[in-house]
Length: 389
Ligand SMILES: Cc1ncc(COP(=O)(O)O)c(C=O)c1O
Image 1 (cartoon, rainbow, N blue to C red):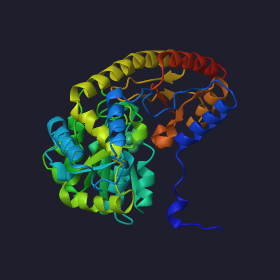
Image 2 (tube, rainbow, N blue to C red; image 1 turned 60 degrees about the vertical axis):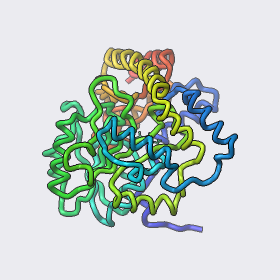
Image 3 (spheres, rainbow, N blue to C red; image 1 turned 90 degrees about the horizontal axis):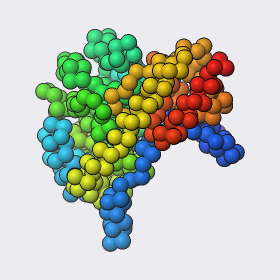
């Protein structure tokens, strides 16, 4: 049977997956591949969180939950976003769902057919496909390395038309590893208000900041009613496989999203919600676990940035957050060719920068969610492999 659904024609698998698949194939063939393409913490979920899920399963908490999420978890999330992010919302403004699902539903529920969404370039690989699934149109605004990967409000303004409905932001940012400053966010805030736009703010790397502060755009004056703030447990608590996160927004916006949740995944996994509840409720333990991971990432960041800058032809700005570096290189190769060269010749997997947008060309995203030994070995191999170019 051959069936072409129009909506699917323009959406392809992410480039990040292509390299990972190849790397896995090489590993299966017995090759010693080091993956610096990883987008998840290399730590295990802290034990006290795992125990909470085990207990939930053992006591029969394995059924559907209310679609919006269990009340206790919505309460602690509301408390967290209110205290830490200045988002003064109650439990009824919280919806529990996997982070990626939260983003997907936010776009599906609030972008009209043919309407435009503004996305920085480079940006995380899934925003543009989400806009396409909603039959929307993506307009990209370059964030340049020379400007410290800052989003310039004037350049955003140039992309706004009468059809623009949404801006998608991601701070701290995957892939650049940079946070947006309050000033930068205020620039976007002014445009959002002047042009009556909705902001979807992806803050999933909030806890992985080495220097500087995290600002939630939804906490700025005038933004409460026009921001959907999305966050989750994956990156902070090493819980990627649990598929658990949340979104917070005003009641009208939330109702639209809740309709999609009800008719798609129904609810987030019941015992994962109990685990998330424990992660937030036992704040001290949770913060300690995050602190330890952050210290480890910080040590690795020093090594990877210094070492990359020592390799001729690479230029690596120091990220102030996340576990990604986004170095530029001088070699006459596209980022896909470069990633392939490193995979084939150094057996090191990296992610081609072009996967994140046109501005990502001539960059690689190199993750430091891997052990220090592996990072050092990988960089030695990269150095040897680029000498052949
Ligand atoms: C910027 C960004 N947003 C959202 C997500 C999705 O998070 P989750 O896997 O928890 O759904 C990711 C995961 O890689 C990400 O990098």
